[in-house]
Length: 150
Image (cartoon, rainbow, N blue to C red):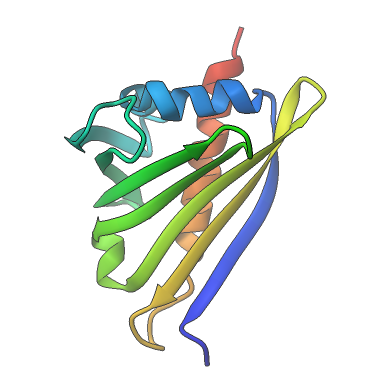
């Protein structure tokens, strides 16, 4: 049984890649406003909000449990990709590697969002991170709905 794996799903968004990534790149501190039931706070740990490679600490709830995730984000506007590299936090007590990625492709007035979680479990008793993929889907849909509401 392999400890490494990748989860992937595709969802349709009403917002454009530019609009969606704009929030992550320049206004990540507003993300809790877009998805208050899931993400409670985001704090800058190192760097500036608009600085590539800055490190942020997220406070969120998964399955009714509050958790913390420290990550470094890299946005590649040419490839419409946003990659988070897990550094510390609750999820890192179960996974040696935990790297969520968003890849958006323009579609009509919106986009298709390919959500990927690359992971490596610390041992074979650790479950595949399905609950984190569900969380990622919910947060993505919440942000999209907030960005596109009239």
